[in-house]
Length: 267
Image (cartoon, rainbow, N blue to C red):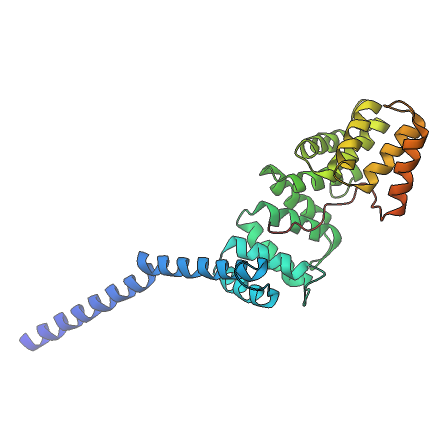
């Protein structure tokens, strides 16, 4: 009987020790902290290679260290890895992988990743084209006050992509983004004021927003501003100035209004 008791108590002690070791391995704050610090170090190393901080720029090395950190849940690393994978100049552009990492970061609430993921769904980059999912993620981004996401959501409302066309809502979103300095929003807001879509027609306000974007070197804004000078709408007619602006803008590579703001970079 004594031997039986000893045997039972011995196994209880062994089980208790195993249980304690298991708990310390899984839940130990020191282990979690060490992993977190290692992940942060990997991210910093990736940043140093990506931006050439105290070393030569090496995108391959940056991608390696971003991936190490991203796989451990580092949201900025996930976002940055998505950007590298979606950059045309990258040595191994992979929109499918970029979409994967943008999605991982977006799920963690990363506003720029949400905007980029919305852009991907709108055009079918790395994911099946899905207008409703594009709007979903752009709304998530805009709700956090991310201005590129706000502008892109405005484009969706302006064109009726994934949502019912609503020029009033588009104008509201363009105003918010334009006032925050988003150049394309300034151009498209100018167009709305010039045409009276979603806002009361006001050529002076149209010229104001064209000029704001033109001062930042936007060719589309220069073209619209030049036309305003040629027609004398919202500004005193000045044929010479108008023609110069139109010629300069036409000789450059213009983009069309109402195009989604493309991939947002880490910095």
